[in-house]
Image (cartoon, rainbow, N blue to C red):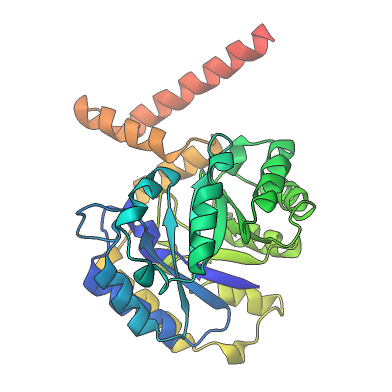
Length: 324
């Protein structure tokens, strides 16, 4: 079992983003953990723009990250299929410094990613198809999409609990249908912690046969945050899946303290609670952003607006049930 640290890529969704200087320092600290559990560091999105943070394709940033990692941990990036149209501007020699590219997919675009998979395989990179918002799919749909990914030659098939909505029994069903159609693909799980289930769900996914999981330092990331890089190994020790001798606890603590001091500080308690509500009602990040925007535009308390929205959702559900 392996992990990918996604702190740098997930930080683009946070109010306090991580700049290039701190990103390189974090990469060095992650590599210095010398933790066999950690196979990849996801350094950002493969996206061409002029953002000064980690949204962009930057040859200098990728090269510096590669030099710092120095073979200690492999590097990966994430891409949305629509951003592949810029690939002619990319330097293939730079891309070869990466080891894995993860493509965000859904039921509408997954069958149109074959050219992207072939492109990165031709360079020598492994490819993961990451199915987002898994709680919106049935087991049958997930099974079909996993089979499609296998047919296209993906090396990994990931499911992401983007809304932080899943409970362990539900997750078991998804992992099982994927494993039944995985062929030679490795299966991954990306947890969000809206309902405080990231640790339990991560362990459940492992017990059902997942090969690789995502973590982030302090759980830093979108909405309710992610499975924590510094906490998850402790759970593995508890379950005798990892030896404490393989961990440097002081370095793990230093990693968390570095992010806390230079980037994160204390998280907003009200925001955390709102994302727990979003998780319970399976509401996605886009809805959360729209509610914040409406709150600012109308000078309305965001919590009251959220509760009003939830009430309307429940009313509509009751109406739909009556119709059916």
